[in-house]
Length: 161
Image 1: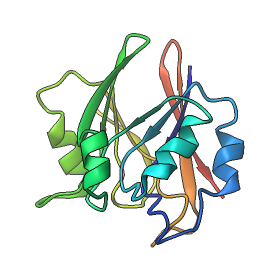
Image 2: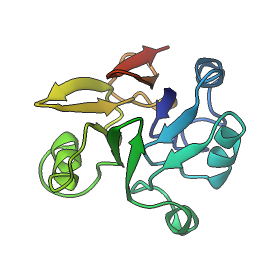
Image 3: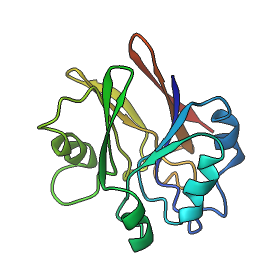
């Protein structure tokens, strides 16, 4: 199973549309995960044209999105549990808040956003994965999105453009 992962699209404030690089990179995905700060509902509708979308609300998402999608979600995919959260809040780093959100859950991978900083590393047995942002790179050198490949293991890749 191939999953396209993105976060922090911030449309239309940071870009007018999802970059073509994302659509090209997601051409063969089976599912898309969006880790929040979507900002406009039509972003989810556009992504749904590619593959089913699982998303969580971020701190910049308005009431319409917050009614449509949860703040936290756990997916059971091919024997693995993948937690999704934006990562905003108070105290600690974005990554620590993401880890803390799932501390009572048996999770194999946590997908988070908020920092706009791509991250792909193990924390003990848990894969921590932040795809960065395809529209607002902030302190990053490049825009980015991610791919998760689930098979005998979970493989994660950050794609920079």
